[in-house]
Amino acid sequence: MTPPSTAVSRLSVDLGARSYDILIGQGLLQNAGAHLAEVLARPRVAIVTDDIVAGLHLDTLTRSLADHGIAADPVIVPPGEGSKSMAELERLLDRLLDLKIERKDAIVALGGGVIGDLAGFAAAILRRGVEFIQIPTTLLAQVDSSVGGKTGINTRHGKNLIGAFHQPRLVLADVDVLATLPERELKAGYAEVVKYGLLGDFPFFEWLESHGPTLLRGDRQSLQYAVLNSCRIKADIVARDERESDVRALLNLGHTFAHAYEAEGGKAGLRHGEAVAAGMIQAMALSQLVGDCPAQDTERVKQHYQATGLPATRRQLDLAAVPSARLLEHMRQDKKVSDGRITFILVHGIGNAYISRDVTEDAVMAVLNADN
Ligand SMILES: NC(=O)c1ccc[n+]([C@@H]2O[C@H](COP(=O)([O-])OP(=O)(O)OC[C@H]3O[C@@H](n4cnc5c(N)ncnc54)[C@H](O)[C@@H]3O)[C@@H](O)[C@H]2O)c1
Ligand SMILES: [Zn+2]
Image 1 (cartoon, helix red, strand yellow):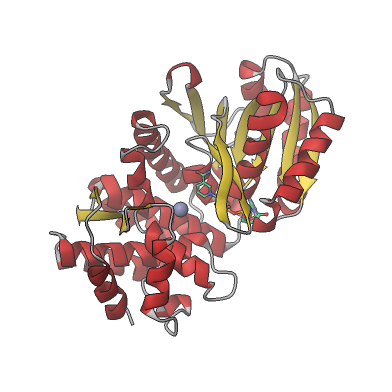
Image 2 (cartoon, helix red, strand yellow; image 1 turned 120 degrees about the vertical axis):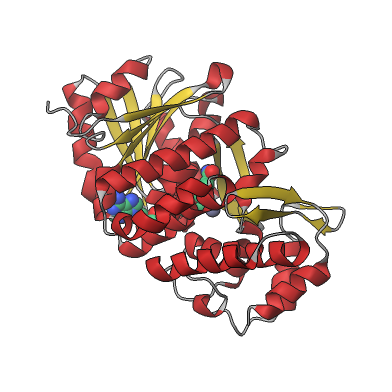
């Protein structure tokens, strides 16, 4: 067994009895058996993955598990958001029961956020909860969905409406697996990386300004640092507010706008991260209008988007024709509405976000109309 070529970073998510480690670096998939052996109660897992990821990375994982005497059965679901459904969940649970996965066994999610959310929810409810391990394979999943314990599926009423908090026992974020990720997916995940800089870490944003383009060309050292720092920021917020009663909402910077864009669809195959990128610029514009965000900060972020090819406007998402009032209507239906007021995450400037519950609809309309 060859050891990883560079040092692996270890980050602890501090949640009392539910605390766990995130390992970030190269060669982690190849050495997954050794890492899992440290946390498994029994040497038996089911690996949930999708067809695409299975074709690229499943063999590496099963070989490493076999080397460490861990029995592993793969369960393969179709790729894409459609798999976060009741029908797919039912099929998956049936399959896991056929395999006689018991409470001391573990479910391993090998894939992007779709696989993590689906497999994590199955782990939360199978036999009232079995062990769960995340091996995220998209940048978005490595910096966001694999950390924090939110799991769930979609229904015809909306996204993520059925789910559970179920923390993993371990997260292995191997930056090597990102080499096979399509460029558009990498960039969409990068938008969430930028989010961490904007919401709470100005020096990290500055670092991204100089290293973002290299990172997007697949430089593994830059990827490792960006994943580590993003997870550190998310883990810190989650440790302070596991169930989103207050500060965890900061992670939604740009997302109220983004969810409205996503509800409209926009350009073919619109990625969540693309919608978030444009949404963060609108959140900054709103922060200028109703708060104290300097215009030059918004300009600076736009310049970074230009350098890295992220969308900043509704037009760039092919949503220019959608009336502002329709977008506002989507925002009213957002989960974050209480007493008719929409909660927004605003910024005092790059690296300093806050929660605002008193933004008026007129202000939101003014910002939406200006972006057209
Ligand atoms: N639980 C949370 O806290 C949380 C947070 C953010 C997002 N999410 C959820 O995450 C989902 C989006 O996740 P995503 O962007 O990772 O999408 P995804 O899981 O659909 O993956 C995107 C595509 O990339 C492919 N893929 C994955 N890894 C690959 C690799 N290494 N090489 C080549 N192809 C690969 C997948 O097969 C898929 O086709 C959404 O459902 C969203 O709701 C959850
Ligand atoms: Zn997001």
